[in-house]
Image: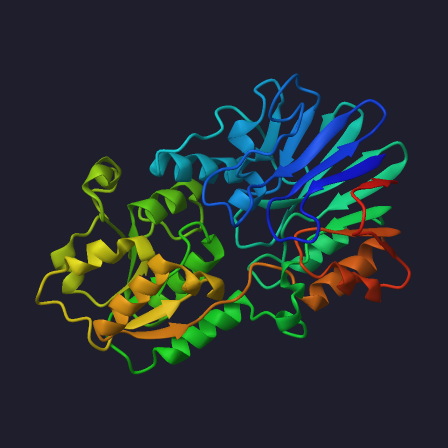
Length: 399
């Protein structure tokens, strides 16, 4: 088998990885670059242009740095994606009126898929994107494990995943959190975040805002539990509300959870709100409630138009996102607006990516002969695993 890192070495995001046997060629992830302000489609013959030469594309999860170019793939090439991951991809893109994948081939965890002579086993893993998967590829007597993005500090049990993974010939792994300023830092777990949030709100009876991604389902669960423990109504806008309702089950959502309410920030989304007659809530009712509201920086105008009788003074804003977003102009403006309203901002976040102990456990379990770091700016860190060959200075690797 042969691995070709088309894009993703020595950078974070934009992953495009080719794996081939003598008879089959597949692609792992088709991410857009994080720094691209608009979609830039790379000139890859047989994937995005010309005559199709790939037998399938596997997408590990719905974050744009892994699936941002999925709708630009040649129509003849089948695309494979986790069942719930696809549903979230579709809902989010429909909401913002962007093109979405029409008919990918969906899979469930541990449901084996054959593309040509390559056997693929997807394994559900923990990440800040719901329904993320690692992929085990088997062909020609070799085994390759691709991690996608993963961590151990969420609400899934990392050890149960490790128990299922075999020894492999090659490990293609992310290393997002291995930048020099993060070395040695251990991630807080979502449960530790929950406990910390409850402690921070002790004695505080003012409304709370949470600045977070509407697709970070683990984080929604964490703040729902904080809201419950501190006797606050949990509020989701039509975007986050529709996403959680799409997942359903035991995920807090405005259809089946009586203490979750859905609110409207934009009139053109009223048709969504109408689907929740029992749990919808308006501005005036919100203003007279003790609530915890999940928000995004794009909601500044909505908050500016709050009823005059509502006072922001003394409210708390939990910032629960990557610190790097604070450099963006729209985020700067939003945080300044909240500060001027008298809202106290508190950072309460944990990473969606693996820390050092997670790599130690994974590599000890799968014992790879070769480690190929991607999605990292510090590939050399992996040299600490002396029994493995670490390759990051060439694109094409024969296994």
